[in-house]
Image 1 (cartoon, rainbow, N blue to C red):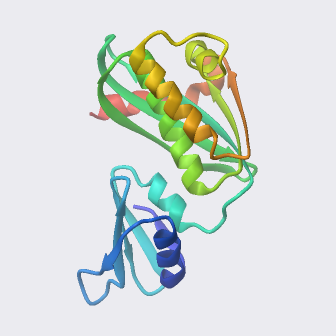
Image 2 (cartoon, rainbow, N blue to C red):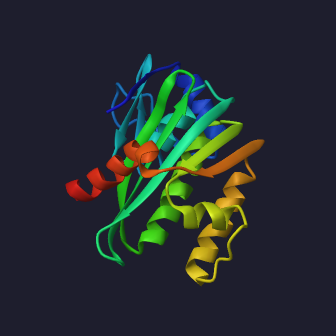
Length: 198
C-alpha cells in the first residue's frame, strides 16, 4: 500500500484538476477520499495512502514531479491463444524505476494482450505527466503496426492501434522500438506473475 508524503490540499487540487471526483472522508481521521483507475486514495493530515489492485495511475496523479523523459517497457502474456491474458509494464527515468505493474485482462489473444499492455503503459506515463516517452517492446508486430510499417488487418487490433496513436499524441515526443525479449524481461515477468497469481 503506497504512502505518499504530501500536502493533502495540494494533492486534492491535483486530483480535481485531472477530473477526479474527491469526496469527504469516511472517518474523523480521513480528510478526503478519491477513486480512480480501480484504486482509492485516502488523505490524512500529512500523507495520502493509496490502496487497491492497481495503484500506479492514481499514484501518478498525486505526485507533483511531472515532466521529462521516461523509458517505457511493455509486454502482454497469454496462456493459450486466445486464453487467460495479462499485461506488464515498467517505467524508468534517470532516477530508476518510477513505477511498474502487472494485471490480468481476461481472455484475449497474444496480440490483443500486447496492445493492452502498451495502452496501459502509455496511460500510466501520461498520468505521471511525462513529456517524452521512449517505448520498448518485444512484439515486432505491435511495434511495426503502431509505427505504420505494417498493415493492421484485424478489426480489433486496428481499434487498439488507434487508441495507442491517440495516447501517443499526448506526448511532446515519442519513440517506439522493437527489442529482444531479454531486454524486456522485467515487463515479461510482471505479466506472467499476474497470470500466476490469478
